[in-house]
Amino acid sequence: MTASSGNTRRLVLTRSAAVIGAASTGLLLPQIARAQGAKVRVGLMLPYTGTFAQLGVAIENGVRMAIEEQGGKLGGREIEWFKVDDESDLKGVENANKLVQRDKVDVLIGTVHSGVQMGIHKVARDTGVLNLIPNAGVHAATRALCAPNVFRTSFSNSQPTLALGKPMVDRGHKKAVWITWKYAAGDEAFEGFKTSYTQAGGTIVKELGLPFPNVEFQALLTEIASLKPDAVACFFAGGGAAKFIRDYAAAGLKGKIPLYGSGFLTEGVLDAAGPAADGIITTMHYSDSLQTPRNQQFRLNYAKTFRMQPDVYAVQGYDTGLLLVQGANAVKGDLGAKPALYKAMESAVIDSPRGKWTMSKAHNPVQDIYLRMVENKENKVIGVAAKALADPGTGCKLA
Ligand code: PHB
Figure 1 (tube, protein in one colour):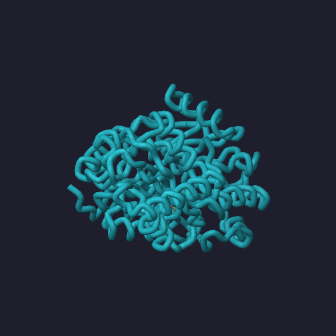
Figure 2: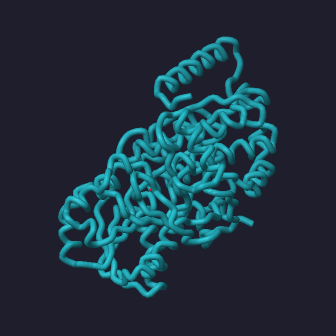
């Protein structure tokens, strides 16, 4: 089982051959595809290049591993995979339509970047295609623009940071600088941080930002040094996060001004960041070191299968696979039976490596948020920062 592009090419070729065959015998492909027993068409729209490339791979690995563990089928039907690299680039509508209009997928799994997600979201709302969001936390998707056919298996952007402010103040850090990429994910993570930090009695002395996916941190780090806050809190992820951690240490700030963050800062980057990451404290809905049989078995299987360590993105992909299997099994593979499919997914209990979680009414996970500290290339749990935290789902009109 791999996530190689060779695999994709083979799948696409097989499909082209099927199209030619169908056309020459006068059969209509969409009818074949929808017939019971035909393969379920699963589309993956993820970043496979750019600063979030590793996140896309981890998510795909997780999805495939979960489905494989559950027998490799969806409600008894085999799967045909389709893949698009969205490059975390704002061509979301165009790329989503490649899967929905051209490839006629039954379900679109994607994506990572909140801005790109809004493109997928438009296509999902316009066409009614089932969309499972394995990462992007953009609030609108499960708030004002929530939709019956859109389910998120990850988090909302403010969920992790709503649990971050209090532990910082509890540790005596009353004046903080916030720094992030200026786009929906960073801005909405800030919303959660501002609420939790000020409610706990902290003061945000400065908000700093740079455009996504810029990694020229130097001038901003110099500014932080001169502001001398008690602590810094941030949102960064992927390749950019590894560089931020290294640059923070290289600027002489590590050990002087404690670094906190939404937990993505230290996910999937601990090898690349090295000792510069030690001591960083974050809040997140997963931790490598959860001592549960479920997590330990997951980590072992993932490491054996993919020869790499899983991170939160792999877990989110895995849970996406579990949710899809549960939904598809409930309707015996008939993904067109929408009310029954949605009902099954709304009432699913996902037995995740992060701990069991359920869907909120607006289709976002209700989940525990852990407090973690990096130690020897591991995100170690040091506490539970919030129990069964739900996004408010403000403005969502789903029943
Ligand atoms: C997002 O754009 O929503 C996003 C991207 C990467 C993360 C988390 C959120 O790690």
